[in-house]
Amino acid sequence: MSSPKVTVIGAGSLFFGRQAIWQMVHSSHLNQGTLALVDSNPERLKKLKTLAEMVIAETGVGLKLEASTDWRDALPDSDFVVLSFARDTVKYRGIDCTVSEKYGIRMCSGDTIGPGGVFRAMRELPLILDCAKDIEELCPEAWVINYINPSTVNGIALKRYAPKLKSFALCDGLHMPHVKRRYALRAGIIEEEAQFSPEIDEGFDLRIAGVNHFNWLLKADYAGEDKSPQIAASLRQEAASETDGGDVGAKAKFNAAIGYQLYEAFGYVPANVSHTKEYLRYWQGHGTTKEAIPPLSIWETEDRYKRHEEMWQQIDQFISGELPIADYMTTFGPDHATDIIENMVGNLGKPFYVNTFNQGAVSNMADDAFLELLSDLTMDGITPRVVGAFPRGLKALQELILDTHELTAEGVAKGDRRLIRQALLIDPLSNSIGDTNALMAELFELERPALPEHWYT
View 1 (cartoon, rainbow, N blue to C red):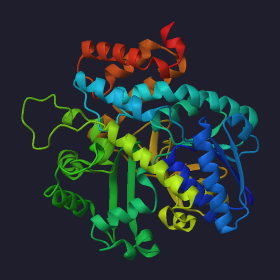
View 2 (cartoon, rainbow, N blue to C red; view 1 turned 180 degrees about the horizontal axis):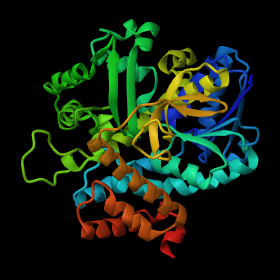
View 3 (cartoon, rainbow, N blue to C red; view 1 turned 135 degrees about the vertical axis):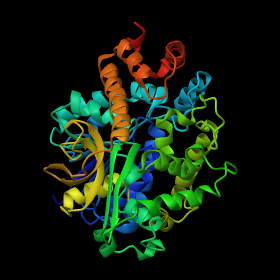
View 4 (spheres, rainbow, N blue to C red; view 1 turned 90 degrees about the vertical axis):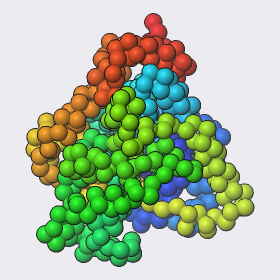
């Protein structure tokens, strides 16, 4: 495939849109193709289109550019469709977290598990499924990459309710080879990032698996030695100097201390502590014993608004020339989704972590368990690499979380309040039927502008 078409729906989602432009012009496998930008906000779309035009002109590549506020205009002939949109996500995640805190559930991110995960799925998934129908009609052979949280819920729904499509879900937390380099540092295999080489990459057998945002290092072997104890020791050492001061966001607080505490409890290192801690009720503040690690800080709405504003200001500076467009080339870099697309188009044979059906990779979980697994990806399909068995304690937690996500996907797809209530009640953060009923009623009322009307009829 010499000229792939990549369509990004939700290009105004700056966490992905800016890097997608960078990768599309820098990759020799992609920069003779087409980048189609789609966003429902005309002003934001215009800015991203202008930025992309400037980057294409600066590099002189043959990349074609399309832009539309209607995804149906962009979908025909697409080889890849990346879903990366969110409706007023800062506002509604703030509501989810604030209301949940009233009922004893503290969420530092509020976009995957707990009431925040359920209600974000209710806001985003109907639009994802609408888009999937149009993909089936207009470009049925395209690969569909879901980049929208809750990644597992939305990924499950695409598999269950749009089974004809080739799809997988994605999160940037396990972007290869960066995640492997990071653990090589923690394990003492290398002392600085520049020392990470193809030989070290090949010799470091790192295996991570689990539900998205709740994955664990099941193996970390190098030169015949298990490096997990060294990785855990680095967490313990880092924890000794951790504080909750400064401008560290809620997702970043006490991650080393929590990671080491989980290692002590379960014997395995959590791979994505900034989210994993939110999946467990231990730091929600329900206990009677004073804990060494304080309860989670909740999602910082105003700080997120400020961060997004600064990101758009940077885009404006590039467009106005206040920042030279040449600086864009060194400011940004490859993105997880476009790295994978490049790999598939170029048949490069690199493995990546994606969310997909287990297919036997974890031997003691169902084949259709939707897990984040190191996988080989080609234009023909996805093959997860074998991991082995999950230890019993962690497997029990994985199954509960998967059941919560499965119920959420089914409840949203069917528009069934009963199933949504069940998902909230079995969610690992729930402790009270009464609180769950009250929380659910309050969120339905406050989020009515963002939810389909069928929930209220």
